[in-house]
Image (tube, rainbow, N blue to C red; front, side, top):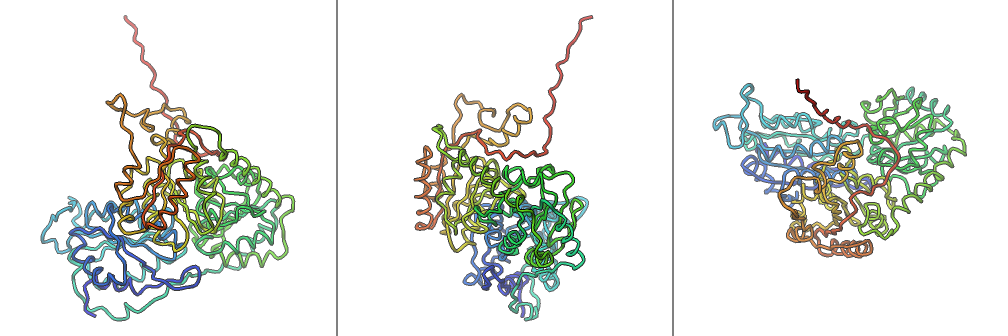
Length: 603
């Protein structure tokens, strides 16, 4: 088939199918987010227009925003579908880099198609080209190499034959999953070639379930049999494997308490008697108490980042870790006993090998007892206290109380991840997205747009602070224009309050974070009218003045998002210095000591 390189790429995308969690089939690439410029409008843009009835294209306002929407879509689809973002060259391309970092850190699939300069070089330097004095082949797209799981620059159309199978592999592989960048020079996009029809045959991508090595399995089982106080920690790999049910059956059969990581939140029903709660700095005192006493930790599908491990202080110094992970890179960390396998297959074979082995009953009962104490603590934080401004914990409590099992909630940065991870009580499985691998401010709104596209049931709610809103709010208009409804709860606490807390808590002086500590020439600086701004972007808006008003506003916003098919924004002033503490330590930089005052002696 004589096609341009851009046409061939788009037709290949249409031929890729995926198996969803429920076993049904769907497009692997359900849509494309596009911002056109001279680098892609006449190549990829024309190819997309030709199939616009089969491959939806959504127009965004900011390249970082549309790529973050693609990331949010992939997370909401449990990594079974992949969002695509295409841009022009230069600044449009570089705006994708942050989103690539989000996808890379969180092991999420993302296909980026930035335009690139001309391989023929006749017009060099082309508009928006950055010239490198030492390397004529380098362009700004080389910046993606550090944040791509797979990178290629297509300089000949026929190169697609070799690279596209690798693109599909990375986007659908449990161990290697991450962002893929295909840099597309403008002249190559429209260069024609005779592509074999086999390239466009339908392919259905199904999860590859790697089984564990029998010797490694026996070693892991031996470590667990010797345990008196085992703890099962569930991460995102369990979520993407669809292994939540298997993990619960493992815990129940062997009496092992269960804790969750950030990416593993809502894998366990909140009231389950073996549920110890979320682990780590932003987790719960209940899970952290069990982790401190555990002699063996079975870490399933988690890379054990520092917020989960409290900078490796949450576990006992002599703890033994069995790491069940699809990626050997993660399985061998920190001297763990490695068990490289799909989470579902690994847990199935491990429980069969363990037979009737069970943890001591007294240890199993600790999970419910500790979690009930933590629940009582959170109940106290959520209860009306007569304060002038609601706290973050109270805001999360309102959203939690009004949410159902099909609803989906997300956040990304500031103080809200600690509140959502530590305080949220699961109503449904895999219904929380806390982007805390990269903690990207701005993900909250763009990611919610993508999640609203990727989910077919329930209400999507995003929680964010005023800082994140101001950093990247343009995709509110994109979602409003496209007709995708979700709820955004904007908590205005007067600046970057959680970083102010970190700053002052480490002994530094409050400076340049909350507005009270920022330089201004005004006696009374202006405040942002978030309600008016969101309304100007086409959103339904529901201001709230207090806790009771917040519950009413959120209920109305849920209805508006569903019936008006646009974002519904709840705006509430919140307390700037009330936080949920899990009692864990986190290693951060130390405050610079004050400069000593010089004294001079007159001689």
